[in-house]
Length: 388
Image (tube, rainbow, N blue to C red; front, side):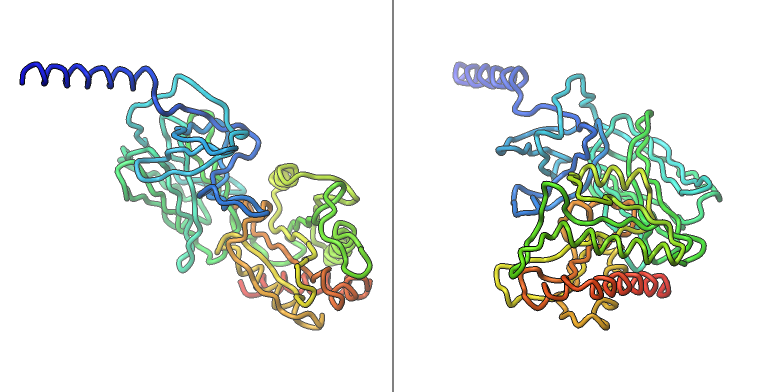
């Protein structure tokens, strides 16, 4: 018995040292090319369902590999997937238990901020909750050592901030807002490893002349998009025509307008998103034309990713159904479109009509109809503002 125990003990020691020398995991950090986590490895034409965009230099623990993705362990009970092209291997990672430090809630002349000091740039995800309106941020791999949260009167939009520890290594941050409508927020780390949630305030005057509105003409350049069923017109050309009419009509109402493209230019999604982040618009309208395998499918639809941005898409769809003669195709949520992914500003994707349907295509070819579309989108934005 002593001999057997000795062999088992020796074998156990050998396995332990083997695991130490050849671990079945390694660490990576995110690059600065808009890395994002996915819930799973499922794919469709829009890619796997996105969990969240991440800042650069976020430390992730890789535990498995699937084709072009790594599986990463966020905490004991949570995992996600990330593209191998969005990370680089790293060494010298602090693998000890991670703890939070003190918090601060404050504001400057433009934004409100919540800062949580950490000892490492750890992964996170966020959701919008309504009734009441709250931003909820999960920080993975960390345990609270926060003993106070300093809240300054300079914060104008943040009503309350607190946290819970739902799991041993997941800290949940709650940020309650004063207004029902979300106007956007951005999550990033500063140079001192402070996780920062920057919250946009509701504009003081809810009128078009006080807003900066971004317009994205879908596709462009090498990305042709859909084609007309009868005339073979290209989606990229007619989204630009509608976008320009929308730009002109908004400028007549004294709104400030920025365009992701003004001509037939090839632009990637990361290029569009980075441009929009630099411009910091109050709203984004992305214009597209739809297509389906069946030529009987027709109508207008609007799309949103986050529940806090749904009211804009609802108002625009309601307006589009008035006077355009278009059938309703629907209001689509949790849409995994790249430009719907950022949380920085309310956004709405408008699929004006179906190029694969002869009746809708005929409307799209009509300049008067395209002008009407621009007017109805603006009326929808105004209704959205009025409802606030």
